Amino acid sequence: MSKRALILSEEDAHVSPKQSKKHWSLGLLESMKDPDLIYKKTERVVIIRDKYPKAKIHYLMLPKDNITSIYKLGKEHLPLLEEFGELFQSIQAEYKRHILNAGFHAAPSMLRLHMHIISKDMVSPCLKTKVHWNSFTTSFFKPYNDVLEELKENGFIKKIQNDVHKSLMATPLKCNQCNYIPKNMPQLKDHLLSHTSTII
Ligand code: AMP
Ligand code: ZN
Image (spheres, rainbow, N blue to C red):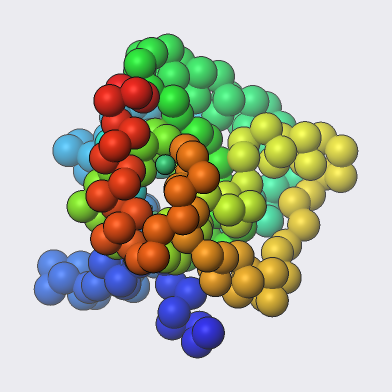
């Protein structure tokens, strides 16, 4: 698989004329300042709407401090990460009828540490590729609790190996809510709709 194929979404790599002066991987830093995208703020955290949501509910939680990714976290960041957990709980409380997952991509494509908060339905027009799917439904998605525990135990987050990354992205499609095995993404997207009445 080429490096390009591992980019999480083509739309993420798409550069509009307005953004063309800055590399797309810096887009979250701009979005953190965009009142239309900001959902909540605290003294040290900003929560924004994901610009290309991969489910009905999809937020990104970022620190105001310039921490590039989970791989720059140390024990000194435990209070920040604990605040991430508390904020996630408050969002889950707001969306009582949805199942939300919180976690980090093992190899993020965008700069500034960001935690995804994403509903289990995975129903969205922006969910298009197998890479999108596998980035949220395999162990490429590192659950918040696992990251918190790893940081408490080791004081750092271990990087994913390139071959593991590649094999996770190549994982055969399987529904995240039952044992259904679709032939392709359109089939999977159709099938996901059959679950929505039970989880929303
Ligand atoms: P990742 O770096 O793989 O953890 O994911 C980056 C996330 O940022 C994806 O879910 C994208 O849909 C989202 N995204 C990409 N560009 C922007 C942007 N400019 N503003 C807000 N969200 C974005
Ligand atoms: Zn299913």
